Image (cartoon, rainbow, N blue to C red; front, side, top):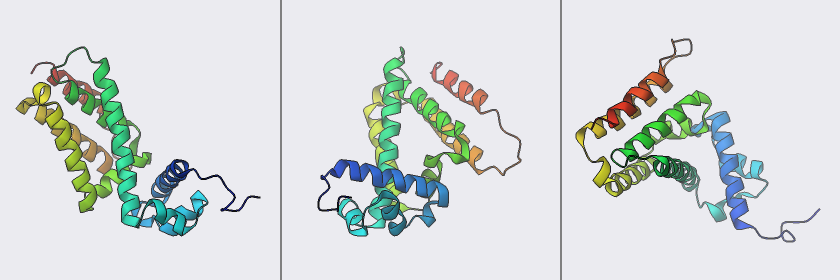
Length: 187
């Protein structure tokens, strides 16, 4: 067995492993149950190795959130590239991504982190900065009050669906999604 000093250095692989393990642990135990020690052990690195990539637990949580936002960004860009109508394309892609996320339900690893953003100022700031930048980028195609309302409705639906109690009737998420998308086509 190779010792840590004999292993080939692969910092990006170690960082990716740390994020993947942290995501799995956050899903299993919730963001509050995420500990540096547990992530380091799950990833097979020392706490010092974890701190090399993420200098604090806060930095790890922010890294997790940044990773989720990067994936969301890529999904939105891919959906926009396939959309033949430029007007409202960001909003349609945002609605689709929001409802795709919702389709995964409470077991979605992103849901716990997104929910924690409501209570974590630095993560909330990251989300606000990302969203503001996207809106600025798509100002020419998506800067109308009706499209803003559609995006806000998608956010509200996502939150309402995730907050419902087990056993509550399942809402018609697909129907809401399609009505919101239809609203982007009439703007």
